[in-house]
Length: 367
Image (cartoon, rainbow, N blue to C red; front, side, top):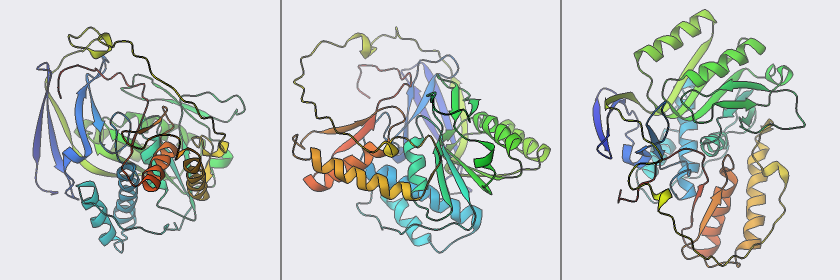
């Protein structure tokens, strides 16, 4: 679908009207399998893409996130390194996201050069680890964070454009950066791409000469944004590549700035309820918390083992009917694993999602 331009029209509360112009959907993924569009309370931008594959705002089957991440990893290998031997798996994963029931399991793929995958907090941490989970030797991972760690002086700070919470931190030192040939930045979407330019300019200043790739589910950069990247790459003698499932542009027909006081805002309609609570406290290995320091590919097997151990403890402690696993903020991947194994041991589909600080406008109306 590379040569076919498609338009998707969204009318949000009869106030915000948007055309999404899909210019490249090379892997024929249904856009309604990937996202919805919603209103948000933010004067910088009045809408957001509510992903159906990252488990943040919407409850999902965790396999959707795991397979979406691996799919992006396979596309990275195909488009950047011209590896076509995984095309049958790539097709299978695309079909799974589009609604198929089954998917093929794949062994970890070793990389030829040391590659650092960086996941962007908070929304993209789960999908970023899912991308990283495809790879074996020479693959390393770290996620950015909003949190300041007391025991670390080596960090870089940069701004996330268009965000409600703009300060981002990445706990990396020059010594650590110097060992890598390739750096892969993973986000759920690129709107302008300015956030990535912010971090690349800092990383390149600290440790020059890396090859960069930006992986995102959606890429909405316009001609002006793309030109900015070309100029930046040329001025800094850098190679920057891009991988995404969907490429296109956003055409805002009618804009509107939403506020907390919108009629029907369900936060104003919440009523008190009494909930019977049973609390089970479980100590887990601290390495399983978000990898805010660099980890290697063994991290994936460690998280897997720990999630299975947690599942064994809690599997009989609640009814699996109508249950949900909830992560917190940046903490997405591990709760999704627990959800996966709970579903398996209970032979039922349990879904998961994560708390979010995104200022989504909630309206009590249907849809």
